[in-house]
Image (cartoon, rainbow, N blue to C red):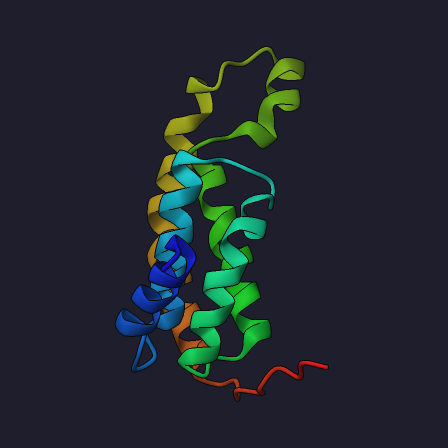
Length: 130
């Protein structure tokens, strides 16, 4: 069994009962802290996340959006997006990380609550494989 299948089974087993979106969001945030990227991780994560979403009958479009929202949160801890602005303003990353980390701590529970609540509103539509 491949690692992808193990991860899909893990998400399916712990993600039942509406908690799937929260589990995927937390996983994405944690992975994003250690592996900052600009969407490239999705190529690696998509197979098992989408398989698991299909298994728990979560809307696949919403699953992708949960990933997108959660992937933006670690950018508040790893502010690579601010590097050009830091150079222009003559600041160092440590001058801003305290503020952005505070934003991360505030937004994380808000985002988790919203992805859980909104995830319950979408219907599952089975993928059509030609």
